[in-house]
Each structure stands twice: as structure tokens, then as C-alpha cells.
Amino acid sequence: MSNLISQNGKKSVYVDGNKLIKVFDSDFPKDEVFHEAFVSTRIENIEGLNVPKILGISMDSDGRFGIEKEYIPGKTLLSLMEEHPEKMDEYIDKMVDLQMEVFSKRAPLLSRMRDKLAFQINGLNTIDAGTRYELLTRLNSMPKHFKLCHGDFRPSNIIVGEDGKLYLIDWVHATQGNASGDVARTYLTLYLKDQEMAKKYYNNFCSKTNTDIDYIKKWLPIIAAANLTKNRPEEKELLESWLNISDLM
Image 1 (spheres, one colour):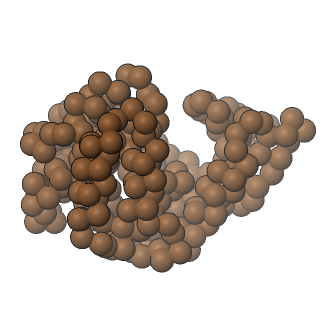
Image 2 (cartoon, one colour):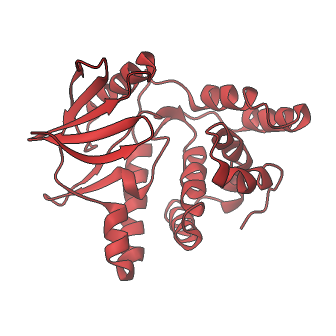
């Protein structure tokens, strides 16, 4: 018997034995369901990453598509952070190590981060043409890399399995591109929830990789603009305030 473990927007997640089933509402775009399954299948074949395997795609009697995945027993890194705040530095250290491992991989069949960001910014009708032009110019000036980027790298997407391994889930936004753009996205995601955690993550990554903090800062207005396309009212004011600011921390 399936047990509901989470529900978010138009998606519900169930566990049925050793399977996890992600069910989409009947009006959810079919192409997005298949895209998620396709991207995840590409990633699961990359050596050195622990990624739950895609087992199949199904459709129930109500016309709802579901993606069946391998179920990984364990807790999310976010849950552990909340349960053991005294270990925050240790958990962030593990998180950064995992992200660095992702960046060491390649996935040449994935779409390019640069193209996705340009598409999002071009479709953003809440900013003026001048701001859009500046953002696209900055995006185009960034070094062209082809590293594997998760696209939504956050503690809630990292499962610490009962076997002690770290599993990275929800690869639907994965692209190939510049790692600093993905770091900026993670920083922004964390900052919206916990500014102290965001700063610890940011400093840890830059220290470990000898990355210039100012370089990652240049990505923040671009990523903020892309996030505005998600139309989350609670984030709108902060994201808009970042569009023309280069020195955020």
C-alpha cells in the first residue's frame, strides 16, 4: 500500500515498498514529466554519483502520470541540520564536497545553463528592457564551461542514506555550464530561508575551491532574475532588489 510522504503544488510523492512514486496532477504538462525522467536517467549512469534510479513511468485511472524511482531510506540533509544545529558546519562541509563532486562530472547531452537562463530572462516581463539587456550582456560575458550542474542543489535534495552515503535527488533542472552559476543559485536558495547558513556555505565553497568571491557575486543578479520567473510573491521583493546590485554580502 502506498504512503503519501510529501505534497507540493501539483506533485505528490508516495512510497510503495522499495519504490518512490512521484505523481503529477492530471493537468501537469506531459512533456515536463518525460523531461524529468529523461534527465534523471541520463544522470544515474554517471559514475561516482549516488542517484536513485528511474524504474518507469506510469499513468493511473485519473490520467495522472507518475515517475517510479528507487526509494532510498534515510533522512534529508536539511532534516539533520534542523535536528542537530550544532553540526551545521560539518553538514555544510559534506554538502560542498558533494557539489564539488558533481562539478567534476560531464553530461554532454544535457541542455546548456546559458541557454536556459537566457530563455528565462527574455521571458521575464516584470523588468524593463534596459535591465534585461544588461543581464543578458553579463550572462554572455561569463566564461563558457560545460560542468554538470544540478540546478537546484540544496540540503532538502540530499538524502543521507541508512548506508551513510549521500544521494542527490530531483535532477529535473540539471544542465551543463559554469559551476559558479550553480553556486550562486544554491547561495540564493539558502539565503531566502537562512542567511547564516547561506554565508557559511558560500565561504566554505570559495575557501575549498580557491574561488574568487567577487566572481560568484557577478552571477547573483542573473540567477535572481531567473528565479523571478517562478512567480513566488514571498521572494519577489528580495529578488528584485538584487537585480542591479553587485556587492551583496
